[in-house]
Image (cartoon, helix red, strand yellow):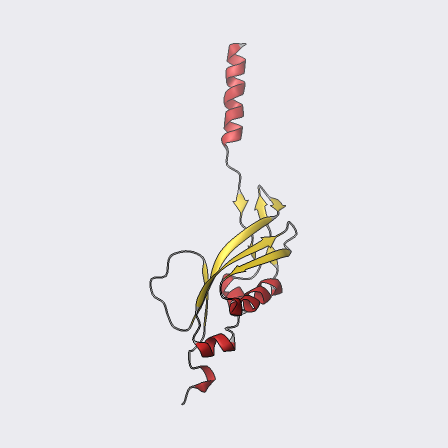
Length: 136
């Protein structure tokens, strides 16, 4: 009888110890495609304003965006939110079952290259500082 319980306990422990497979929510398009939908606001470009904004996107089990939180200069908020709502999202799955989740990423608005940026998911939206005002 002791052997039976020992075998049962070991098998139960192995079942619990197995990790579940989680696939994070993500846009149905590539990250580069999402980035390309984010326009650099003209007023920010003219003022020379740059920013790295933190974005939190709530995605339901059907892949619908239910909320977007934007932490950065408000001048960039509409561009980011508009792009996020334009694309279809793939919901997070755990062991093949879709679930509600939140994905967090940064969006960098810059007017020139910044070298040695930290290695994390960052979508960089660039614009020429002179834009259409440049003399040719």
